[in-house]
Image (cartoon, rainbow, N blue to C red; front, side, top):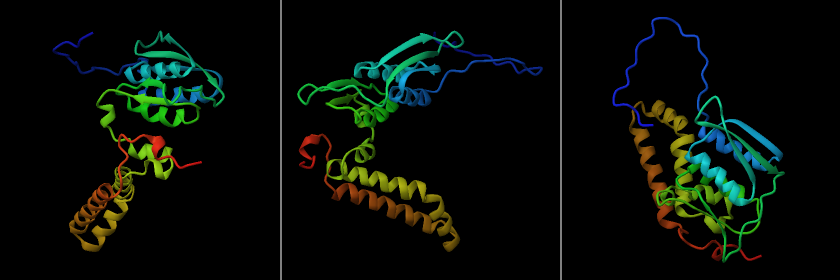
Amino acid sequence: MPLPELIEIVPLTAPVKAEITVPGSKSITNRALILAALADGEVTLKGALWSEDTQIMVECLKEVGFVVKVADDPDETCNRTITVVGQGGLVPAGGTETKPLELFVGNAGTAARFLAPFLCLGSGVYRLSGVPRMHERPQAALFAELFTTRVRYSGASLGYQLGSVFGGALAPIIATTLLAGYHSSVGISAYVAVTCVISLLSVALLKETYREELHERLPAV
């Protein structure tokens, strides 16, 4: 239903006593779906959000081989009650190298990120694909952790992780120390510049593996 051009909000004149049911969370719902699939037996999720991302996750789990049932939520039209039959940590087998099990994740970042390590618990070959924009989103750091160093530790991955650590996690501590030492923002500016240079050098000097077949880089057994 399209929204009207003008939405009038009238200030309240007295306290309100009411109960409401809010839509569920996309991130929590998709995390819960993965946990339910890993559980042993039937798991029922109540108040689960029914959005594009969560619908994609449900369809992917069905394609893999899990039994998933979806029912309406009488209290909120945007929510669903979802029942998943877990297989005790087992993931149904995928396809073969010549005919992998195709899973379409659309533009659902949570589905792409959560399904990748989840499918590593299975056997066979799975292929995750999405809309063109999904294939442009940074995934190098995730795959660097899923596969051995020789497979996916690319320059972009290392640069991304260095930037996350030095430009994110440690940034407040380092910035506070530099500010106390130099009593100006000069030290902080220099630190940011050095961090950027290190990340760029990592990308430039280390071999990339974009669009390279994984089996070509897997270590010999």
